[in-house]
Length: 94
Image 1 (cartoon, rainbow, N blue to C red):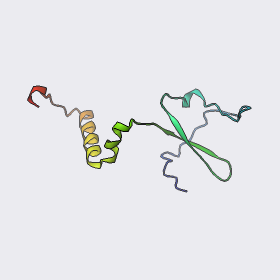
Image 2: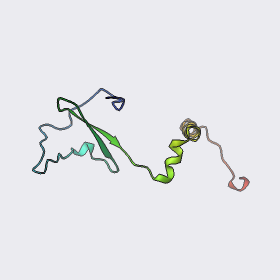
Image 3: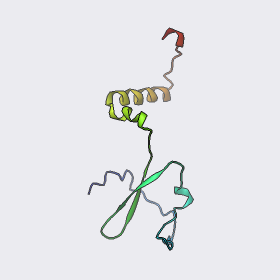
Image 4: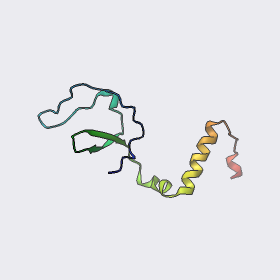
């Protein structure tokens, strides 16, 4: 099984003695409960569980992730903006 979903090995205990309820549900601690996040659940042969946070995107935005050139351009633009490399554009000139 590939484990490339583990991006950081610095795990911290965020809850102690969590136990499934009568319907076998486990409630996540508040620190992990963020809006818009779902989890992919992984388990191994000894019963350890990893929750990998996921987000959904609208289908209309999927094209960006399927187009490496467009995604690279967006990332470059965001990097330049973060570095303060901005210029004013007159929308009437476009």
